[in-house]
Image 1: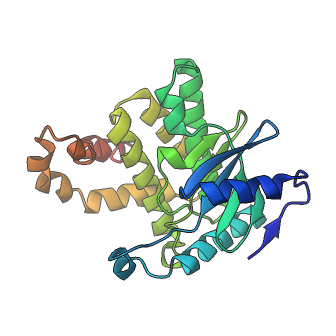
Image 2: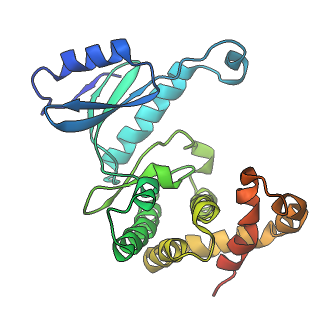
Length: 247
């Protein structure tokens, strides 16, 4: 699937080919004439991984098709500047939520506002009948005026329904709570933003799912007690259950 923006700068393709010839990273940054672009390449599977990861070319093409569908639906996703069989170039969409949290360039009030906007943006995506697949703090960017979604690798047709959208909310809140603590201002702002804009009763569905699987918190308590940093996702489960139990 070849895509080429009508506003492609002169000389950009030569710069891209030079970049691709020296950079094998799956996602890499390309600066051209002072502007930032992001290059995503098809996954190169080697050795025994070929057994577990089938047809990277098909998966890459499918992800690109999903992204194009999001553009057609008016969803907030980055512009595709150029795309070929093995690469796609996106316009820069600003820092990710993860990056915003980790640096001190924004005030606590600004960070809270952006988190609220992130919750609203996910709800609006769901209100249009779309969903992400597995949203995380690294998959949402702030371009200065709106939230932009990245990476639809986990998007699946069988989850393109209310349950899939509810799982979106749960995955996103869980991801945030694992990094920031369930009772943090960032998590609260995201939840408030989502509930403020949810017009499809997805929040209620998410609460129902969390209630049904609440026993997982009890089952994982031995893991929660560990000091291992990999246990953070389990340590956040009690807080997740509280969040989705609030009226």
